[in-house]
Amino acid sequence: QQPVQSPQAVILREGEDAVINCSSSKALYSVHWYRQKHGEAPVFLMILLKGGEQKGHDKISASFNEKKQQSSLYLTASQLSYSGTYFCGTEIIREKLTFGTGTRLTIIP
Amino acid sequence: DAGITQSPRHKVTETGTPVTLRCHQTENHRYMYWYRQDPGHGLRLIHYSYGVKDTDKGEVSDGYSVSRSKTEDFLLTLESATSSQTSVYFCAISATGTNSPLHFGNGTRLTVT
Picture 1 (cartoon, each protein chain N blue to C red):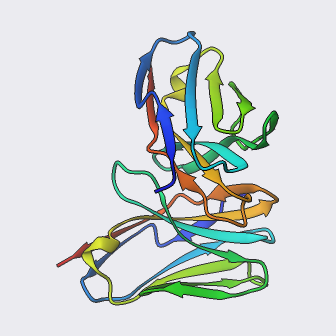
Picture 2: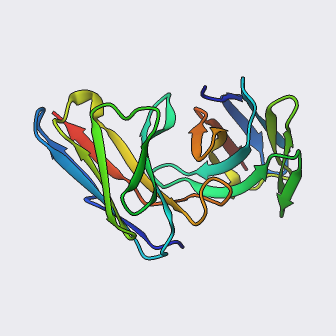
């Protein structure tokens, strides 16, 4: 029941855009997105709740397609600070968040 | 930053010994979680708690037990450590469960030799 993230890794130049996808084989109550830098704890980015919504802050936004059981994270005009591994967490069973294996994003100057 | 402290930060132990990891929070959050992180597997839920003395199993709970006797403390015990339990363990807290953000502690790196 682990969600599938794609791509597994991506390399961008500063200023370029990226999309990270997260898909589930089962219906979702919610989707979370986190970013983790090497050797650090994961840090919360956003939650999307059942109802199919789009959220965003600054240049990072996300969408949740409830029917397709998918979520996408959009990073626009990427900055060096965006580098890290991005994890989606999906809630299939209430109160249990299952994480994908991550997408490693590298931003080069 | 959310007030979460994990202890110890690093531990090396031998196969067969019991090990207890502690998670302490100062946020008075109701929900607490234990995850393990291994290369290629992401974060996997071990156990979680939705209140004092209220706990439930996650996806990889075999070989682990938990206890929560106070709101602020959530203990993870490996009854008899095995090499497969070598991992980085993260504690997380949230105010209202999975409809609110999870805030993670800095992790405990456990090596079982």
